Length: 309
Ligand code: URA
Image 1 (cartoon, rainbow, N blue to C red):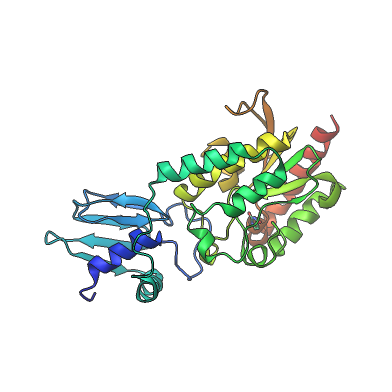
Image 2 (image 1 turned 60 degrees about the vertical axis):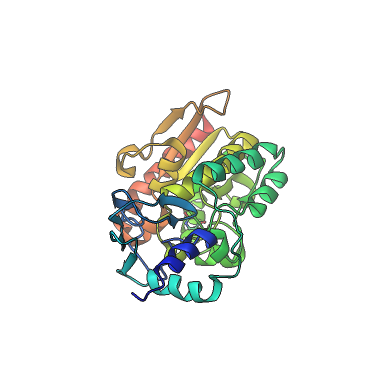
């Protein structure tokens, strides 16, 4: 890499640019994507998703799909494994001196800002505005729209998915692409219509580039809004669509295959009463694994009985 290493790390710091810039399609379900896989005392500040991941000391930081190295002379060498580096590099050329005074925020600061804004919202409208105005998550810089909700806010069935994809990003509506059509058909099989019978949102409000899996940091930043969202909707049951939504909301790491189709009663620390949760396969997964649709259908029949009861 050329001699502009300091500029590069400066840029990452100033712009909150991150390793999520990959424009390559990636394995949506790869648990390691975007995670820090190795972290030893760092020499320079390196920022991933607005989060300072390393600072002034270290030989090696490895992030899945990217390797960032710094040597003992304080030089940072970024070895790119996919197109992330090219993306950062071209943005660097455009932006490096654009906003030198921009303040760097730690993840804790971002999360407490999110909490403050979320708690100040006293209606779904106010919460939507707070999410739209929130600048803490760098995904927003690359998104076309903030994707907040769809369906009936008065329904006591709250459906929570993972993150917007391409169609959702373009239209600003959750689950409006192919997986959304399948999800609507799944609910349709038990006579539930989105406009009347359920309310739908995601654990992330902006599209991760290339539809990659959201990082833990992105989920943590958005969580205060998700919690407030649940408080304001006050659902009787939450339908968690796929593994990411399940782990982000219930903090459970079990495979969906193990926990799907059962009521999971959960005491959130931000709710006064326990809330029922029901995990279903993500429609994108079902589009790839159509043999599993049979199980998903049975889960929906069970859900129908639960909702009647
Ligand atoms: N997948 C999701 O999890 N959410 C959407 O809104 C679209 C696709």
